[in-house]
Length: 111
Length: 114
Image 1: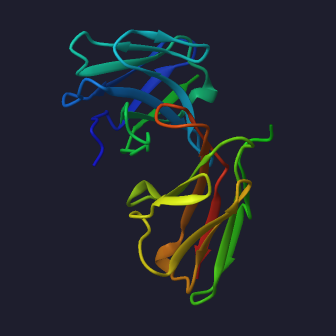
Image 2 (image 1 turned 45 degrees about the vertical axis):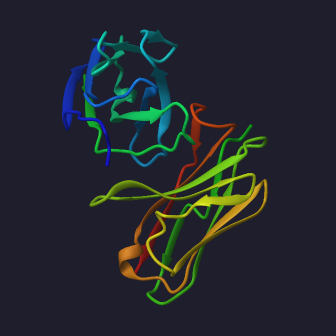
Image 3 (image 1 turned 60 degrees about the vertical axis):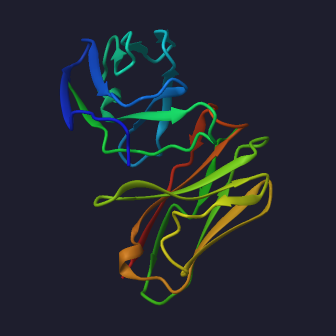
């Protein structure tokens, strides 16, 4: 079973920041938080991952709380193309890194 | 690189027929994964390979499903005989190295079994 909890859906206005929360209260010390997204009819796409420090790349920022029990994915200026299902996944660091997908959050970016 | 390539993109077949889905991973990637996605069950891992060797097939639903990876650049997922409940989108993904490396997904094959 997935180790994360995400809201089933969220809306965001185009051009505004989209903040997607994820709860992973049972995360252990060597487990990473990964985010993937799936645009309709496409394969999932990697966005970002982190262990305990905040991370930023060209797509998004990842904010992980100090106790690591939750995180937030931030899309700083959402566009219509960011409409997708966003998956938060916990991956053990020493494992084969297999991904267990939950139901994710359906983000709808509206004009 | 062209990314992960899957064929066919769409397959419609009749119950009882054999179905073969194909995947070409990204060159240099030594892990290959097969997933299935349905509305009811979401995205599920079926099987994965490391250096062409099947490592974990615990997600394969039943004996009607089989997967092979004869070389580093090609894998197949076969369903024989197919059933309507096998209708789903099947994704192939590849990864370079272990653990935390990124998985890259193909565009998927949409299978419809009538």
